[in-house]
Image (cartoon, rainbow, N blue to C red):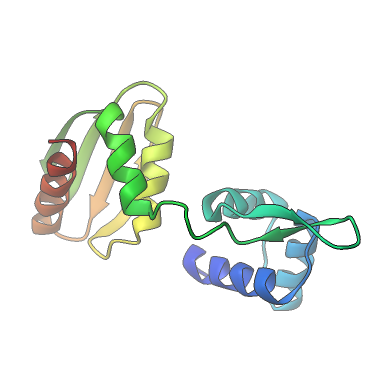
Length: 150
């Protein structure tokens, strides 16, 4: 199962159930036939920006973030302005050099875009390798990123 499908199930669970702990996500997803670990749920919660909100009983449950938060593309634009050093494309690959420590967050934002041109991203501490589906997609993707930073 792909991450986007799993996260869609998580979103549905949050909207229809009261879930107080990560272990409850694991149990409910396993009951749906979706094998998942607590570590994966933890990453999904972070990526989906789930928040804990109080219940009338005094307990806290997971909820979707408020709508006022920025979309992934807007977050990427804002983050790139201070983090992007340079980029280069070769064949289907885009190599992005970032300021130290920023590559994981930028790689995560690129993943959240769910851009059909992107096959995968690999982020280190200060560099990201974006693997695109075609050489043309790689060139266009890099051009868009460079346009974002001016």
